[in-house]
Structure formats: structure tokens, C-alpha cells
Amino acid sequence: MKSIYKFIALFFALLTLSLTGCSSDEKEKDSATGLNSVGSLSDADVKACFDAVNAFRTGSEAFYTNADNSTKTFLVGQLSALAFDEKLAQAAKIRAEEISSSFEHTRPDGTSCFTVLKQVGATYGTCGENIAAGYRTGSAVFTGWKEDNKDYSGQGHRRNMLGKNFTKIGIADFDKKGSNYG
Image 1: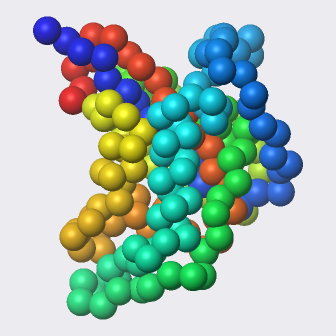
Image 2 (image 1 turned 90 degrees about the horizontal axis):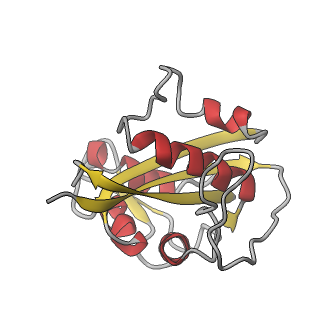
């Protein structure tokens, strides 16, 4: 029996966009993309992931393993919380649906994942993408991205979440019934 799996995409960016909040508790269709508006902080899984990332950035576990795999870079007390950004959430929404069909950092048309930022009108200086599939909650996704006890090569998601240059974040999820991912 196939289950429902969440596909979550997250963009971090250093942006100069203003933050516009979401207040709707409903997941309405977005007329521009035809997708459910799942990138809002009213979505419980998106909010759980957002809160966990910010607690991580500002908490006592803000460190990652260095490339020598024997030392760590500690960022405790050096990072601020990220602001939720609607343009990034819109990009993440598009990417979450795309990765439900092709779980890659490359878009289905063969272009870089970051081309979606231009598509939604987001401008940035530095950006990063984390993707996940098969998790059932936003908190579980965050735990997977935390990459505890992995060496440098296994902490790419962790380093993105702790990026010093990142100021904003956009998160979205996409539920796909009958998915083979797990």
C-alpha cells in the first residue's frame, strides 16, 4: 500500500525583499502556480520546521564539522533568527512539487534549482536549498537536516541552516498521495 509522503523544499537567502506575512489558516489554490498555498506559517509542518531552524541557529548546537573532520566551527551566539519570506516560500512551493517527481537539486527541465528564484522575482546575493522526501512532519525533516554525528561531507544541510550570510528563509511542503518515496 502506498502512503502519503511530504516533500519539503527550503530556500535560504540573503535578500533585500520585504517580509509579508500569511494570515490564512486555509490552504487555498494560488492562481499564479495552481498549487496549494502551503508555504505559509499557518501550515503546521512549515511552522514547525521554521521554528526548529531558528531555535537551532540561536541555540547551543550551532556548530558544524570542518573539512578536516576533526575540528568544528562553533557559531553559538553569532547567528540571528531568519525572517520568513514569501518570495522564497513561493519558490520552495514550486520546488516541493517538482521534487515529488524528480528528487534532485536540478529542476525537471535540467536547470539549476536556483532558477526558480528568478521565476518568482526573488533577488539575492547568496542562497542555498535543502530538500527532503518521505518525512511525515516538519520537525522530522529538521531532525534529518540537522545531520548530527556526520562528518563534513554529510553536513551540507546543517551548514545551510547555519549559514552566516543568510537572513531569510522560505519553506513549503507538498503532499503526494501514492508516492514511492519513503
